[in-house]
Every structure is written in structure tokens, then in C-alpha cells.
Image (cartoon, rainbow, N blue to C red; front, side, top):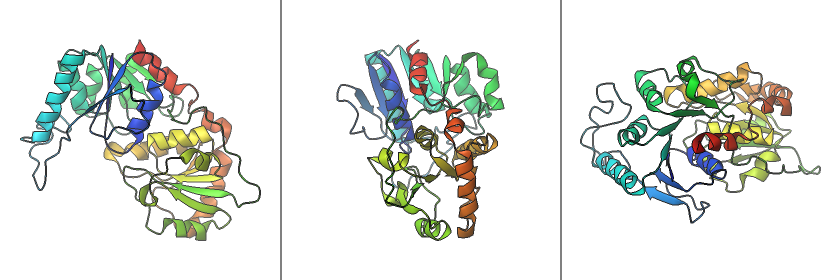
Length: 328
């Protein structure tokens, strides 16, 4: 049996995990503080972990353990309960491997319980000692992006156990939607579930700045869209954040993209956006553009984001390659 820890922030970690386990023949049990996804098969186990944050107005004391960890606050009941549930489940279920996406502390706890660990790498500035510890103790590291587009220096010392599998999308292989010739080309504003920095009047600004498109929004304040693929794959241009799953989904749709990174720990999205821009795959802007800046950005995106360019992210077969690393 394989244990699989999924971080609860946003939906990207869960979406990636579900894409990967579709290529595993071995039993998988998930561990997460996120709610169990409705679309997860009923025969897949899900261990609900308590949240590791103080309740109410509780104060956080020494969350980094004197700079040696990322999140281990003192005297937080949820953290003790969470650790107990995880270790007790490991002792009962006896997984032969744990996949951790992502938490240095969870990876360390699993390894201290004697379980081999596969860690999902994340973009950004991860050269700190705490991330180094998480990567050091891992048996294998899965980097869910293309080494042709992004190969960070801080990961180089782990080259012997790092597998650059390509971007992983839940939509890989799905048939593309056919845009209606009788309707204006759709422009899609794609916001994530992990928080958005787009202004409240973002759609109005896009409609003023690029009036040739019929602008719609998905995610963020617009609400989560369960049937995103027809909207995404039928769009003429997408304005998106730089979360890993969002980029993978846009790559699967092979749609022109303007990428605006959001602030995340360790510069995750800014590093992704910079790598994509440097590779000439997308158009990017460091902050939300003015209405008069949208037309040239979209022109650049439509020139860059061709099928050949998106294929450089190596999304075809990426989930299967990640599963092969985990199954080995």
C-alpha cells in the first residue's frame, strides 16, 4: 500500500494526486486536512487529518523551532492530534512508501516512522536548510515540470534522485472543445482556490482592454467551476495565475496565456512565471495590468503560446511518469 499526503491549501495538490493515482495499480490511502473530493472513487482510502493551526485567537509560538523547520508551533493541540493520527495510521496500515505533496514536517515524521518517502518538489526559492532537510531524507524527488523549461540550481545537488516528469494535468488526453464560429472568441480569467490578487473589477477591466473577446471567469470570487475543461479548451486566451496545476491545465488545452503570478511562500508562482517567460511560452506581467496594457500582452501570448511551445512542458504522459517513480 502507498500512503499519499496532500496539502490542504488550494485544490492543486489534490488534483495532481488524483491524476497520478489513476496510473497506479497498488492500493493508495490519502492523508490530508482537505475535505475528501467528491469525485474520488469510494474504494480509495482517505484519512482525515486535524488542522495544525491554533483555534480561535490562539497565538503561535516559535513555529519554526528556532529556524530548523517551517511549521511546528508550540502547544497547538491540532498539531499533536495530527501527528498522532498520521503515525497511528502508518503503524496500522504499514504503507511501503509515503508520497508527500508537500510538507517538510510530514516527510520527516514519516521517515522517522521508518517509511521511505517520495517528495514532490515545488518551484521557487527552496535553497533554505529546511527544504534541504526534506529533500535530503527523501528516497526520490518528483519535480512536476519540464527540466527544459525550469531546472533550479538549488535542486541540482539532488540530481541523482530527482525525476523531472513534466507538468501534471487532470485533463491530460481530454478532447478539446470546438469553439462556436457564431460567437465571439472567449477570454477566460482563471483564478485559483488558494487566493487571488485579481481586482474585484477584473472582468470589467479585461472587457475594456480587450473588447474583441467575450470574457468570463472561473475560480476565485467567480466561484469554482466543476466542468472547467470545455471552457478552458475552447478559449482563445486565458489570463491565469502561475499555480502548477493551472499552468498544467492551460498547457493541456494548448491555449494562449497571460500569466500573472500571485504571492506565495518562497516565490513559487513568480519563479514559475519567470521560467515560462524566459522560455518564450507565455506572456507575463508582474502585477495586474492597466486596461491599455492588455491588448499587447494578449498579442504576445497568442504569438508565443503555440502547441509546440506548450509541448516543451512535457505534459503528455507526465502523470504516468510520476506514478512509475512512486511505484518503483
